Length: 71
Image (cartoon, rainbow, N blue to C red):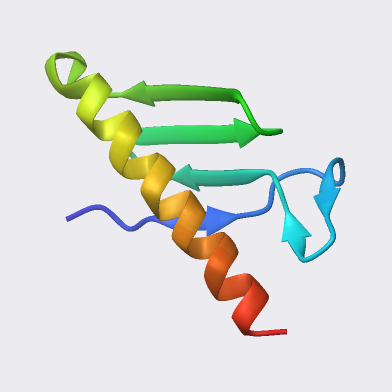
């Protein structure tokens, strides 16, 4: 299993209760959300890129919720 890092990569957009931008990276995956509708994905398995993108979106949303709760 890869080691994943989830972080806020930029100093741009900020919501009232947290950041919009989230990045999830590992040796085999790079997913970034910039703003509300822009995202990018690079992954090893191109056959599953849509499913991987949807899962990463859910992880990003969960991280934002955790960030709000942890303030």
